[in-house]
Length: 92
Image (cartoon, rainbow, N blue to C red; front, side, top):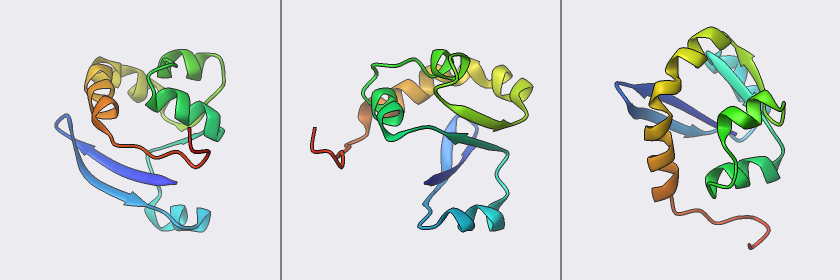
């Protein structure tokens, strides 16, 4: 699990959480859950995040209206994901 804090179109803080219970101390504004295969497709650019949410491949908890308003920043997330060096646990 990863917790990140965006601010001004940038990621201000990023933390990898070792245990699901670590979420309790953070109380995130949004919580997105999906199987590994869905996250992998998102990172590889093979799946649109909006489509994934609409098709319920990603379960989102939080104020969806605010999340929808932030869709204008989707291009920023796409550029960040494209630059990430990623190693997948399945080796592919």
